[in-house]
Length: 289
Length: 159
Image 1 (cartoon, rainbow over the protein chains, first blue to last red):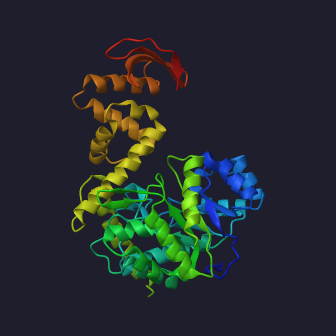
Image 2: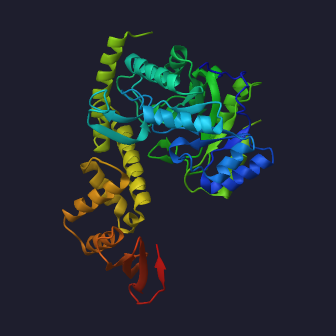
Image 3: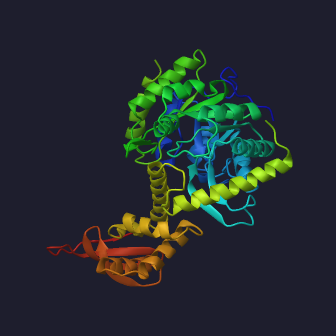
């Protein structure tokens, strides 16, 4: 497997503005695709069960829209090696949809008192948690990505998560951690600007300064989503409107990488209506200046 | 930076122990030592919200318990989740039974038994109405009886 990432690669078909495919907005996604306003989308891998795929999604893919399987439960930053069954699901979905890549997160989702999850007491966090940004943790993550890459038929891209907390033993900043990760592996980056914003606010750094230190040349595509403030933190809820500050961060990214123009995908998972998605899309499209 | 296989195994072992310790604290609503307590407390709340959402998605009747989010949070921080969201709701019911049961909780526990197919019918509050809930196959029918302070009969509906 050789990676096709990089802003000038332009071979993945992942371009323009897009909306994550969810059953509640399947009609809108189809409408945008038919009008030539959407060229790719993303599905949550854990919600698609082959061979019983929603016919609206099959039709979308058959019409030429690129479908990217996006995993949320692999736990690439777990101490344990990635689970073969979860990798197989991602691989099967990529094959089924003819996807140019699959994506996951730089996160751990379960913990076990031994690195052998088959024989320990496993605690499921039920959420994407940030790994400690130490050199040892980075080495484990890189090895897990290498293992995943060997079992996937297409390249893998990993997304920065929204992290409210930081570990006391952190040795690297998030931009440094991700940059070193891309140097150790051939992984691409799904840069989520809303997550970047949330994490920067939580650790008290400047989101724009952090953005410019990310490995932008390895971007496969971009995520954006809505959120809300709580207790002085910004929460990436996927349930609220896209914040102006997040849209500004997206503008900064697009200006920085121009003339390259990565695909930008809007995620919305709750309070999911066509009106809400259209309103978010207007904000996202407004970020292209 | 590359590690030989043995070093990597050691790193995995140490990372496993550290992640397990931190996650155990977060799932119990305890800030792990050395972490910012405000950020850790918010992370714990995010984790329990996810767990509660999964429980109410799997068993929507959970949300009919007055003050359910507070009660579920109290439960979740005491009891680690084992199994799926359905199992979590079963454990939540057991936890509720073991504590002082108010009339509202008692009524909801009977309602949960109807949803679980363990009881044919009961009277409990739903959407502000005292209602008769009847299990029919995999469905539960609701017949509105009275609404405080006045009384009103409503039409039956199925869920």
